[in-house]
Image (tube, rainbow, N blue to C red; front, side):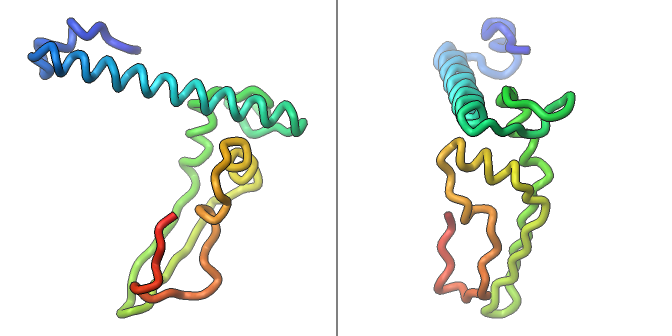
Length: 124
């Protein structure tokens, strides 16, 4: 639940500028959430696809459901000397479908085929 900025002010914001900044961040967050939800729903509808939802599969997930789907994806990355070890776990076909819907590169969810040294690493 979004709280009234005036109710938060006495606790930790104190200044009107901070209250305004919190309000702006809240609005930006809501806009981003709306865009994610709209893009995923449009793409799933145009492709006649569905993703897991709260009550089974759905073609109209909320942004919260879309983001929660990625909670099970894990990337483990560490270095042994000059060698990088990378392991990805939990990526399912619906994750790549959502990447397509949002225009994200699948490379973010793929383990590099060859181990790399620190000089060659590029973060997506």
